[in-house]
Image 1 (cartoon, rainbow, N blue to C red):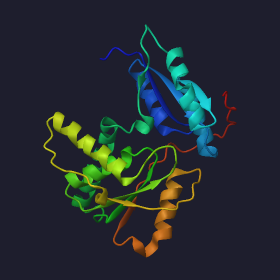
Image 2: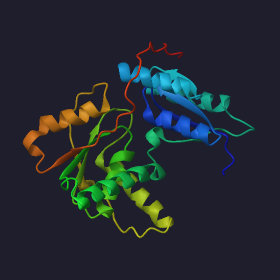
Image 3: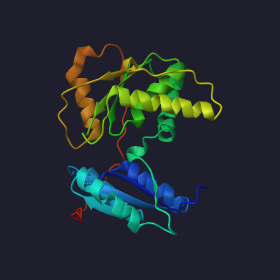
Image 4: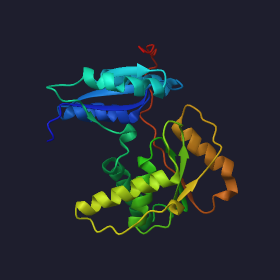
Length: 245
């Protein structure tokens, strides 16, 4: 509706967000350009990269976030169309609109609690790559009236992802909902989000979240829900091509 034909976003070479952007973009007649940064490679990353390359997206790979940032203006110019630059989407889709997806996920959890499928979690543990999942969950849980806290385990050092950042995104999402007619009076405060420190990074998002649960042990009182946010399972391993830049 805004007249763009191409969109641009960024992530790691195993990004599930980038794949979703490429597939849904193609379905809606949009071309997707991806700026991808190297990350530790395992079989899942190799398979995800294969899916990304089969999605039809234009892919530019770089060895570091710094190199991608330097190259971003060139990428935008190269893929401009009709004098218009591509429409930029934030990493991970972590915008107020993107966070709505996990507001809905929180409402689904609340519905399962109400039906007796599971007890009300004291804590939901989730990996935090760009913040949208934790922000949406925190807001959705409060809207649903649950007392559950969100514990986000930060899995990269590319963005500022502290409780202030995530609570601000949650409140921006609530403001967006109000503009669309929702009666949302909730305000998310940093105290609604638990934090952990001293995590040693590893290649897999959800392994870090699970490792945190194990390491904290008795510190996590009450039922704990570990949210599984990984992408598709691997099919046939293949060799990942070397980066072009």
